Image (cartoon, rainbow, N blue to C red; front, side, top):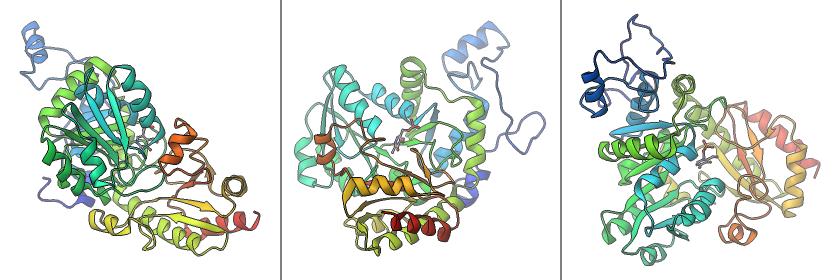
Length: 396
Ligand SMILES: Cc1ncc(COP(=O)(O)O)c(C=O)c1O
């Protein structure tokens, strides 16, 4: 089916499963466990010899539809749904890494992923090196005999830094083809970017964001080759984290996904208009948005992203943090809240909120300035959002 239909169709038509009543909307299967027809069938199901559902932590009919759809959208062989983005990311690390292994990660990533790597994995005897992946030679020099995983986000949270995916793949695979390259594709979504098609091994998502898109469910995804997904399900999810997505949330994400392409189109259009407005405003020092030709990484973004550049932008006001905080306190329509990728616009201050897991020194070394303000541009009318920012800028 993947070969027949385009992305905008696949968000709702892919991987339909027939249920007993031929329901158009997938039913929510709430059952925690599933009956076997015999003890023998139970045993063979546990040995992986049947397609029977056993227990929802190991698989669920509603969640399975969502997993198949996400795998199709990311052009991956298979996917697993998780209870959160952090559940997905930690399950990948726990599946791939053991005491004595080494991870190379980009230094500009979501605050809790940074904490998981910097504090969580290091406590387990896993060595983590944070570098700037834009420096090809730095990446090359950071790789070691015991490097098992390379991790990055692009666009990165919260600076929108763009990492050239193909260059990273080339550098890493030239060194050792067994190193697993993991890319967090939360900001771009498969609508704008499909890292697996560029040579990445594993894609992770906070599905809480654009994939669900309505801010009413926490979830995460891992997409990759069948062999890894099987291992991640049996080890990372089943035995180590247990971070399984509930069927109710799976249903919400299946519903939200239907409008992914429409929403991303509007998010991107709105974000570009707002980025242009802010870039020309006299009180704004700098705007970080991959769609602006003035943005340092614009050419790389143009090369690897399609249909636009996403709905997140960050900016610094003249006068830095004090002015930024005043702006946040002056918006009326835009919500002061963390998270991103919802229909409604959200504004936050990374240094004191989402990225407060970094020490000041780590944060500044990662390009996350004190005064940086992150705006998740929603799908409201762009002129209303610009009017709101405009009145807030007048007050500072
Ligand atoms: C880029 C990125 N990855 C992962 C996560 C973690 O996802 P979740 O909050 O669903 O656990 C977030 C959350 O903000 C994020 O921004």
